[in-house]
Image 1: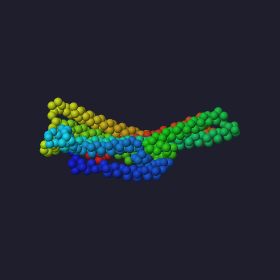
Image 2: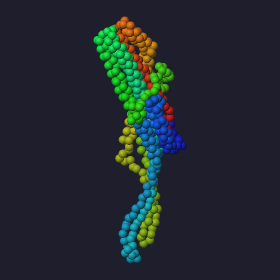
Image 3: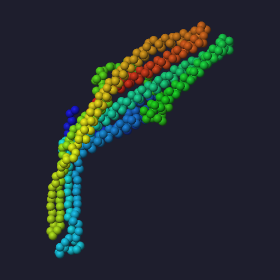
Image 4: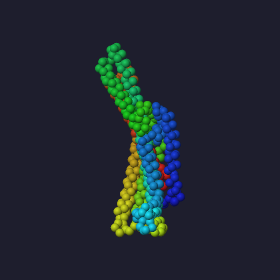
Length: 436
């Protein structure tokens, strides 16, 4: 990639300060918005807003971005000059005209400056900028992962709420049937064995309600952790329903989607950083120069003042930076291999997400178009026939069990589709502005 110009470099060094002010301002606004969010009717959009404001992993990623911005400033700093001061020949002055109390001292003061050569400072700045770009990409990747976790956990809560509702409806239906059956037993129209069978299934239905309540509590706790509102976990209630099957699904070429993913862009930035570090290691063989100027004062029979100059350069007689160069070459090769690995993983993720989305969508359509209707009709027919005495209790229980199982399978299928849809959205998510 083309290295940034000096003007752009100076602009970027001042940019982190403004970014920090912007983050603080947005954070204060976000706190007010978060306080106004109704957790008892939590929408998916509000859940994302809470995640952006309070998620701990995101906050850690933002701290890393701030540190990387500081590293750019550190890399661009010029060497500070050195002030040298000294004294020598401290003692009584000799000679018949000098008092015994008179002391002699030769004094000197000087200043030296290191001048870096071989574009070392420029290469350090460019490497730090690419490192900061990689950290920004990591931060966006953390945000992508956390957003996906929030969305999928949100649908876990929706699923738990639906399962609890279905279980409660089934338990209520059994309660009504038990009441009617007890009256029939008293009138001699129904055997007590049939009432016992109904009672067993009614107890099972109540157990299913309790299990669904536990799953709901677990989903609330998991979502509350991601949103940073653990103390309010019991209040969280998902208010949205399932996404429409096939909604906003536009398949894009895998190659186009993965190149603009944050994890891939972060890996590309690290390759560029390693390349600049490799050039920087080679530049170590260019000798830096240290120049200095010194003022000397020598009191003797007469005071003598003098000015001197010095220049020093290192002599590469024992070591020529072979280790630094070899390590930089190895890190560059490792960065390229890591980029290949990230690209392959991203391509696999996109392909798998697309396949799962297609498969779960077809499964949901089968439930919505055929299975749920057939199971409902069979249950309604069994209920009608039982009230007329045309079938026995076992046939009624089989029909109810079949309907209950089908409803649970259908809601599980739509939950799988909702999670797969959000995973597909996250896998194909693209960003811009990561590279320096």
